[in-house]
Structures are given as structure tokens and as C-alpha cells.
Length: 85
Image 1 (cartoon, helix red, strand yellow):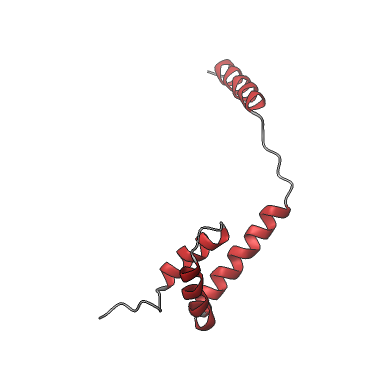
Image 2 (tube, helix red, strand yellow):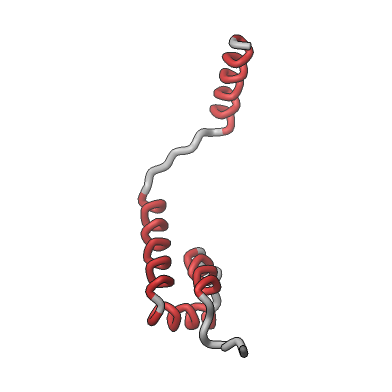
């Protein structure tokens, strides 16, 4: 079976969708993805979930531990662990 240069598999479409999300997809890839999205409900659902997740992550106000806070917490954990052993 000859592989079509215009129609892509669902897995390839998901990969291109992920690349598009980070601005790494080429114009040709975006066009092939658009064709796939026009008729494949599975790929369309994946793309919608991916977009919603990205929006939520951008809107969230996630604060991470700084390196010194993390090392202090790890040190306290190891001290408590040593007490119980």
C-alpha cells in the first residue's frame, strides 16, 4: 500500500498536533493536520483536549519550590527518616 503524502495516520496527526502547540510544526505539517482534523473525530477530540490542557496550564498560577527550599525540605525529610530507623 502506497503511503499518501497528503493523508496522515492518527498517530502522526497527534504528533504534529503536539508540535503545533509548541510552535514547532511547519506550514506543510499544519496543512496536513488541518485536512486530518476535517474528517477524523478522534484526532479532533485529541486536539481539543490538548488545547484545553494548554489553556489551563497557561492560566494556572503554579508556584514551584526554589532549589534552596527543596534542599531544606529534603534535609528535614532525611532527618525524620533517620529518627524512625
